[in-house]
Image 1: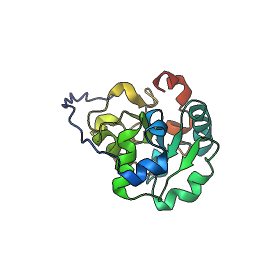
Image 2 (image 1 turned 90 degrees about the vertical axis):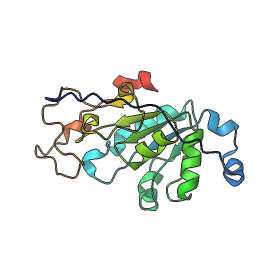
Image 3 (image 1 turned 45 degrees about the vertical axis):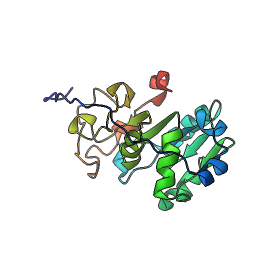
Image 4 (image 1 turned 30 degrees about the horizontal axis):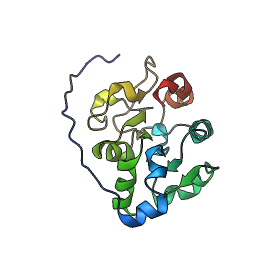
Length: 190
């Protein structure tokens, strides 16, 4: 609970982004995408990233039911390769910005940290399940039109938010906001 409870209202207006022919062929569209999900597990700052070992569990869980696409920039490719397994494809740095948007627009949902990918997926009208650590959605950075029901965070951690942008080192030294977060308590979201 924050000291200030802002009231935010937004009308859901999203961009419709059609898939181009090459991307459709590459992904096996429409079959692959209709049940495909995206995961953007990294963010610019460590305080906004879910631990990679825990993310591996989420990826494995989702890959049982869905084709999973790992999303990120070229600089994320090596780290995201550690999450690749059957039914999981690392697309980090392999597509243009336009192709990333096209892909996101066709996915069932995207799991993202509080990062650019959260905003991009929400702008193309895709459901986003966002994971929050040092920051908090009430600071005004929730994805456009995103529901608070799709927010995964530790509700009652008194040190949160410790940073508006997630760029400050955890003063407690334990990054409890991410390390103590259990995504599977919220698995009804996925």
